[in-house]
Image (cartoon, rainbow, N blue to C red; front, side, top):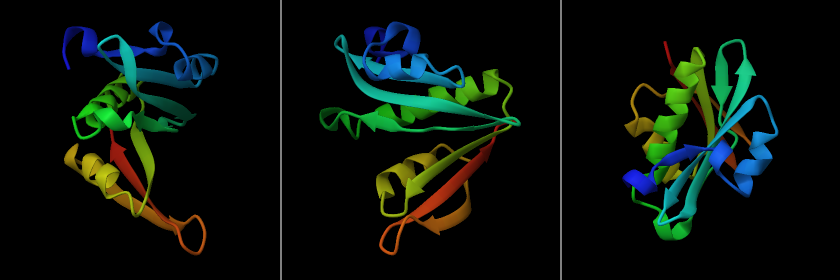
Length: 130
């Protein structure tokens, strides 16, 4: 993904990005390929120097191309620019692809584990940004 297929902020997006634009504590990023949004993610500013992302979505036809990782890199860049000290992400334990992607970005540590219910477990990752 180059040139037209870069990441842009919510100011240039439509649809999902419009929802996040209205929230001052959220910054949205999108991945665009051939003029259409193929990936979306947001950074939720939690205060006290921490952030968490509420969602990352990549269209099924564009998965396994590094788009999710590209969105994560952009979100980490935004978090650092905002002067935030820690980035956290909660992922379903069975979501191996997302967990591997986070781990591949380096310095993400598992800081907590829990359960949504009796059958679904989650893992919380954190990364120091400073």
